[in-house]
Length: 121
Length: 329
Image 1 (cartoon, chains in turn yellow, red):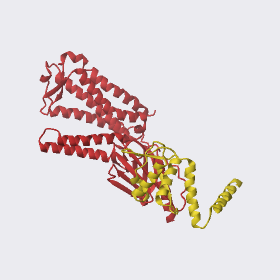
Image 2 (tube, one colour):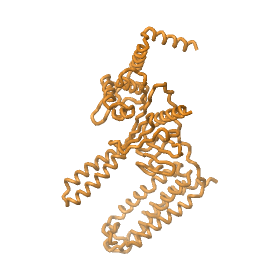
Image 3 (cartoon, rainbow over the protein chains, first blue to last red):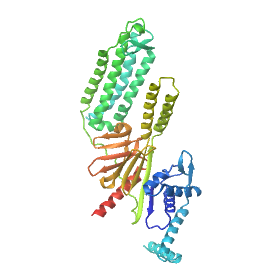
Image 4 (cartoon, one colour):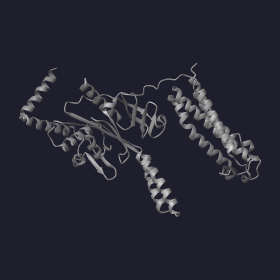
């Protein structure tokens, strides 16, 4: 499973990891029924504490995306809605914008500008 | 005329001929053989076990099937035909194994011929055994030499460059985590572990005997469990391969040593079995046949690891390598 984290992302690490896993599932990297690598291995690869990775997986379990089973590890229960995944990214974007002193309206303006430029091409 | 086209018919005819000859040739002699006939000889060379003729024949055929299956399959599939080295070995196993099967049957029949009871069968000494093994070795060597006839082709390019990942944004960190498990090894290892405990506790025998038995079974169980799976990570530091549930032993290949990565299909009988296999030109961590992540070092050597989802791992390694080379230039 391929996970990407953004080093500029101001959100807590466990949220970022949860988002990365959610995105990997939404993109079809891992399918429902597939087993996820143990939290311990994810943590080692990402260079974070095992508890942080576990916390991220627990969040996804509470959302109904993952399933924890004794002896069988963590597996994918359902594919998250693309909307949920996008929402995560937008939240991250808004938080970063806030750090530069930009509000929601300015971000929406940028998005609209970019979308128009793309359509115009 | 393509000389290779001769190999497959000869191999098939030989594979069929050996069991037919071994089981049918003694049939006219059946009334001169005891029933059951001696089929096993003790260390002193005296017959110590007997079975009816049909059982002896069946065991022989099964033994031959076990010997011939892999070489015949590889010759027919074609990959072993193309390379002189592999072709030689496969032909040597077929010829040597076939002669061994036939010689074993001849030895059994001759020892039993014209005896009233299997206990009266002729003793089998070291000389006879040497003759059987010698004949097999000679046949194998001859086939190996003969199989050198024909072209020696490079292995077909089964290596597949991975589809590149989308470029990572600056400040983005990507890692890849995957694994491979051999279910049969986990089950067998766990079973052996239970057996080791039972052997150590339950069986009525002298303590030192029990301890030896339990310890050797336990050690084989642990070795099997350690080789029952791998966990593989690709990070900015490079590739890390850890064995078994304890993630030990672990091997790290720093990114600096890696030239490029790709995906290749490899099978246990291509690399010489399961576990950590070393061959000229590189080594393979073989847990299960199929998709392998292969890294090529700057030195030209390769390390392959059988692992699921190898393509994404190879793609990430390649993009990390490209990033590294960009930073240097």
